[in-house]
Image (cartoon, rainbow, N blue to C red):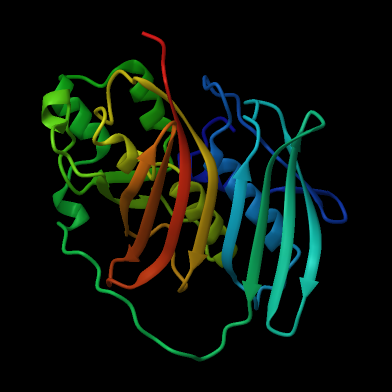
Length: 290
């Protein structure tokens, strides 16, 4: 893996090894994290499901639960159950196992494209991505330098992330903040031409910033954290074809947070303003001990 670009490493993560019929194994890189990134597990599980479906049937929805934290550095085995192969729809269930324990499950549905009704609400008006600073540049401008942990993260990051609104850096700045956030994103480098790779790469990216909307009224997005957060479940609906290595706008909002859980919704648009993906996720927000 030495010398590989971040995008090439992402492609490697999504290139699962088929070890038996309907059984795949995915890499889990060694990271200085408490748990495997949820977007990685979701993206790999969708790769496993997609490998058992014909290329003429793209995924149109997935529903998943994060059951246990994954262990960095330990391979993950994905077991695919072929639930249904119909004339128009195909359904797969995937169970992710690590060291003999189920850590994640996913159900995905694939649909043979067909003509039908067409409409959507318009994309919000936001600045173009080229006019916005990268996340690393914004942090560097605010702090005067990029702390070493964030520098390492920036070097490994496969996606260029640009926040539509300037980040708030203090509790005072968050006063009266709405639970909304928006980012432009794209993979840094080409992901090739396989539509399944682009779908699974965007699935990976969809877990990166979605819970920002829940946190915004409570604490700055970048800085000391007062909550331990984790994804609990994740659902996505894929409306149109897209490329994850071209700019997409990820608009996020949190309609409710109560107790130790917060709900977030996301809408993903391509550069032409077409709604390509809708996302919903619930996250755990457990207050850290002072």
